[in-house]
Image (cartoon, rainbow, N blue to C red; front, side, top):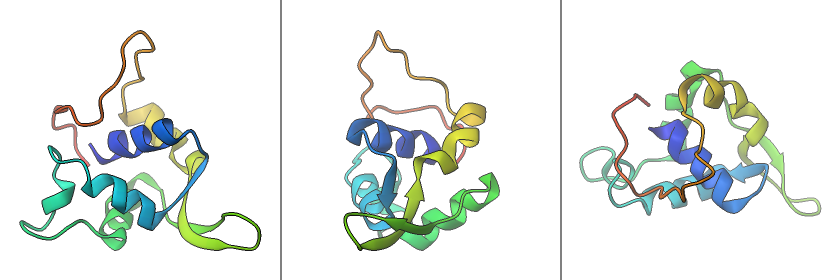
Length: 107
């Protein structure tokens, strides 16, 4: 589910890198997902996301933003293998709603 939601964030924004804080912000806005109440009452954190992504071989890195600015975050390319292996492809004929309930296909 986390991989699917992150893929949707990258797709919606149309960019190739995202700071961890922005991923957290987008995830916690997904009302019908577990991210706003990850630890029963607390929002999921960047550290928890990193921990969930670690088994897929995905780790945060220093990413270049604009100019000389950098932040901890993720490049889209780091997710390619995991998306291909664990996330069903988007159907281009249907508009995908990231708020929809997905089957529990793991984190």
